[in-house]
Structures are given as structure tokens and as C-alpha cells.
Length: 270
Image (cartoon, rainbow, N blue to C red; front, side, top):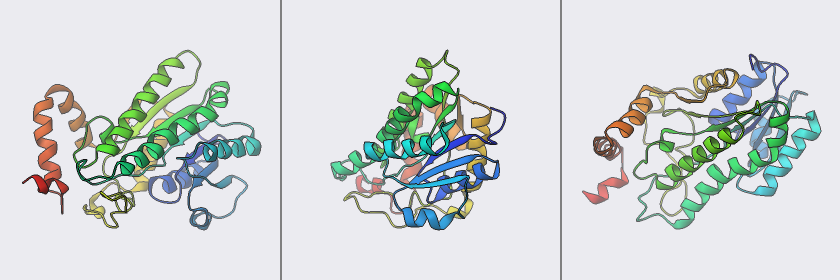
């Protein structure tokens, strides 16, 4: 897939951050884009009306919403060439303190949302030799303290996508995932804390992070290049390899890194 021009691209979670940037970038490349979000009014306000854009209200944690969204795309354009499973939320709380519903919500959105959308779109992807993408995280390779539910959901996503890629090996369809590093977006602002409410602010200096637009450009280049998987940051690549080669040292380094965060929940154990 050398270009996205006139390809039908489906993006979940498009009302902010990487999803918004992906939508803008895909449209700029001449794609026909279908994008969904829970907040339909916010989604519609972001993009000018166009016959190349379909905005849809959907909560990807709900199977019926995912199926209705994909069915609307198929009715509009007759096919799907690329599915980008981007919708997701994070968390920041010790497992000891977290309400179990926080873990369940992350799995429902980050993992099950990917499964539901992929299930409905798969016949079209196979027919048109398209691409299924998961927006994952370093947390999908390396368990992160204070993010048990987030890491679990991303590990599950990557395991699902890797299994599916192997199943489809001789169909011409392609399955992949991209793991951004820390990216400037609102994912940390809306991350769940122990009681399930939102964090409301980020512990990071967002001005020093990769922008959502830069991340989106990398993702779409990986899609058109049909890459197997991509880890976008040097820090992320180091974490992946260190965890494979020297897991005990990686445990200590990751712990120290997250202990230094502002208001780190790990300080409870010190």
C-alpha cells in the first residue's frame, strides 16, 4: 500500500490527541476517513464537513456500537482498507488501591474495543488485502507500575493482533501495531485514578514530548509500509530490549523511573 489516496480508513477515538491527528493526516493524504468517538458533538466540531469524512458516535467498549459504526462505513463506501484501533484510556494507581472496575474499563476499551471493531471489519480487510493496526504502547511489552490495567490491556491487544497476523499470513491482509512513546495528548489528563475518576492533569511536561502530529505521521508511514511493528521512541526501544535481555535490571530501572514522577503512587511503599 504505497499511498492512502482513495483508501477507506477507519479510526477509533478521533476526538483528541493521536486520533485527531491521524484523521487530519489521512484526509490530507486523500483518504476517505471514518472516525468515531463517544463525544459526537466534540468530534463534529473538530473537522469541516466533507464527503470524504464520516463522523460517528460510538463507545468502543460496547460491541453493538462497534458493529454499527463499521456497518455505517461499509454502507457509505462499500469497503474498509485500513482499520486503526486508536481509542484508549490509561490509569495511574497502585493495584492495591484501584477499584477493580478501573481495570475492567481499561480492558473493555483498549482490548475489547479492538476485538469488536476488528471482528466486524475483517471480511472487508481480507477481501481488499487491507491493514489492521493497533495503537499500543511500551506498556504492551513491559509491565509498568501504577498502570497494571493499562499494561494488561496493551499486552492483550498485542497478543491478539500477533495471533491474528499469523492466522492471516497467506491472505494478503496485514496486521500490525505501533507503540508510541510518551506523546503530547490528553490521555494522561483523562487517565483513571484509584476510584475511577479522571486524573485531570498530567505528571509530565507535555511540551517536551513527541507531538500527536509527529506520531500520526509515523503511524501512517508504518501503515503504508506495512511494517510488522514499530516502537517510536529511543527510550521505548531500550526498555523493550532491556526487558528481554536483562529483566531484573529492567525491573529496577522502570521502578526508579516511575517513582520519580510527580505524586507517584509508588511513594506509598517508601
